Amino acid sequence: MSKQGGYWLLAGIAVMAVVTALPSPSPLLHEAELVPLTVEGKATLAVLAFAVVLWVTEALPFPVTALSVMVLLPALGVSTFSTVVSQGFGHSIIVFLIGILILAAGFGHSGLGARLVLGVLRVVGTSTDRVLLGFLSVGAVLSMWLNDLAAAALLLPLGVGLLEDAGLRRQESNFGRALMIGCAFGPLIGGVATPAGTGANQVTMAYLRDMAGVELSFLDWMTFGLPATVLMVPCAWKLLLWVFPPEIARLPIEDSALVRRQEALGGFSPVEWKTLVVFAMTILVWLTTPLLAAWTDGRINPSMHAVALAGGLAMFLPGVRVLTWKMAQQEIQWGGILLVAAGLALGLTVFETGAARWVGLGLLVPIALVPALAQPFVVVVVVSAMHLLFASNTVTATVVLPILIALAGDLGLTPLAIAIPAGFASSLAFILVTESPANVVLYSAGYFSIRDMARAGVWMTLAAAVCVTVAVTVVGMFL
Image (cartoon, rainbow, N blue to C red; front, side):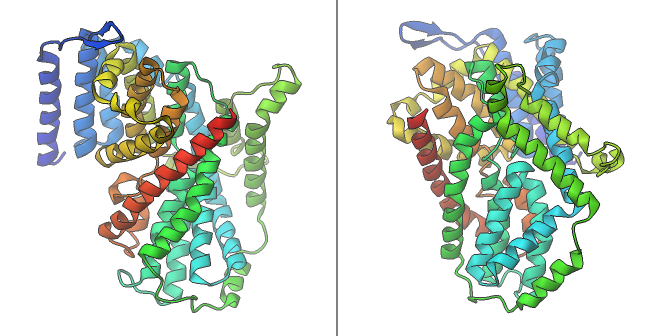
């Protein structure tokens, strides 16, 4: 640990100690009911404050900070250790994430990603505006089923290769800026479309089920997420062309060069066919589960978490063998799984001790004063601002969702109308490079600066807030 990291660790411990030692505040009055902050709730907020300090400063790796929470909660008498562990690691979301990450590893290892992007370029041609739209669209589609980091990693070498072939210089080319930022924006946008897109989606669904009694299926989430994604892609396209007008109308690359690259891949290899079949079957079962349940009177109703894990495990089956376990170990982001597990335990404890309700009434009540049609817009903007602080999709969802859902229950708001936009915003990290690993991956190519991304990201955040508001409002009218 660096010296500065040690100081921040001590600062986090000091903040936790101060919050614990402070006298309990006066109860809040809500509709003739006094809402106190209990001793256990105060201790939970102290642990949350400790975690936030370390998450913001990155004094320790995100997963290490999250796991320390699982030790601190029982140490302060808030809950038992077995309860904390079961709330986190015992949650079905964990096996869902493992299955998704194995599927993503197989998709990247097989070469399907590179083949998909080259195929799209063959279709859209070499016009700079159409190339940008193609990369945005492919990134969004990939991120619907993988995750934003995996999608960005697949786009990076193809985008850089295209720019280098065209002779466009780093930090000098407007089109280079637009394309590389677009390779980040596309995966971020597509990540909200399905529960598989990002861990924040699963965290949102878990809190809705556990705190509000709202059970969403895979298709239910897509009903809200897919329209939002479809609206955001053209907005991002036009916005990037406006902020970074391309200096050339067409890339100086012959179509024959793209043909040669695609031909170099050869025909579909056996491992690509196997991966494609596993992916297609997994997605098919996800989408048809409600129909299967209806046709069989509930006798066949597979959990989407179980389906994800089964799809991941299929990658290792004899006759399929897309991955070895050693490959999977190297490619799976185990730290992200630990972060989600510990974050769930912390968020549920914040809710169960009443701390989320007390904080929500104290800080976020003004959201209820906003007209119902504008509430999703305000939620997206507020949560996006908080994302700048927390620099993690899962951390943002963990901190914000329990408070917002508790607030919705107290103020008579529709939980979905608040939680869905907040869940989306937890993944829409458009402004700072450090907000998402996907952003960092594309920034490393050197084509855009931190300031470049912030310029486009502020506008994109506002555009996304409008798109999410329209999607949630319109879909809500029919449900």
